[in-house]
Length: 159
Image (cartoon, rainbow, N blue to C red; front, side, top):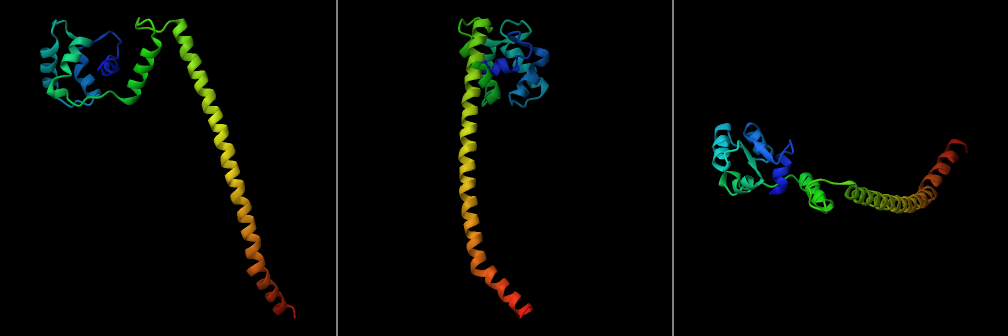
């Protein structure tokens, strides 16, 4: 639920204002009209602060009107990655935490590069084997059919 909340908290303020609430629900895949969105907002804005915070959002997500909401895969990945590297739980990534992110990205890039090279080498080997088989078949076909036919035609044309 936190992932879904932060994916629609576009201002990163920790709350969703009433003015953008209907659009935020639409981004999550909840198709309701503005009056229903306003009623839902008023029902779950417990502190009447004019915005829905994370705790209110969690309560709102238990409402039948919002059933079946799941965050988009890329947003969930980003949030999980953020949580993984926000080691102190401060809600931000400091220089040391960012260094860990950069190191993992660099290691992942190396792994992908190695895999790409290995895949290219295997592919080239397979193509080379097929190429040799093709050349062998072409030579045998030529000697069995084309060359005798060409010789026969040449003998007819030039007796």
